[in-house]
Length: 210
Image 1 (tube, rainbow, N blue to C red):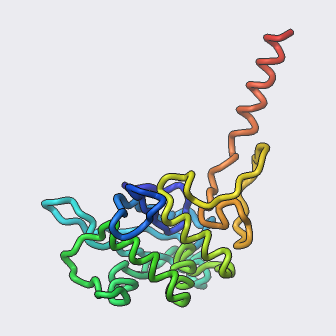
Image 2: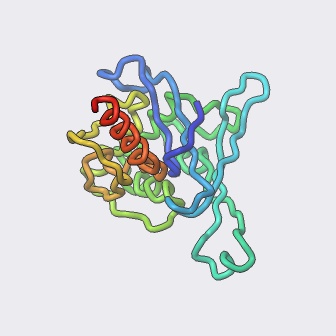
């Protein structure tokens, strides 16, 4: 499944049994692409490599433009290869997963999350890639645990988020210590029109009651 909207570079895994999340129960993959909109990191896009017969995703490569480059504001973005999945993670798995014709299965992605758990350096590289290396926040052990939990939560009720009562019209916090999604999901579109909609509903209800 393919998504955008969070504006950051990430993925999620669905399981047949969320109480036993493992490579064996990994069932689906949600590919959540970064954005050209430069509000959550350097503008970027993904190019997927797909098997022409099975339609399986074999790899994807992210291309990004550096907003800090002096020429960015004058001559425009220069698109450069940022990373590919198999180059970044495939050789680090046990056994290595580097065959260019091998599908990026849900099992593969679960194994990547296990790699994140055991290799903090690789996890921090992933965390930096979410914003394409732009304005990278610190992600400590608590942040890391919730981040990995969210990667394993294609069904949102399993994402380890701590919800609070009430309505928040603002953007979600990006702080790594924030317990609501712990920066796992950043939504630059949230709350833009919600106040106007609620105001209209409230005024209509007031009119009808009167």
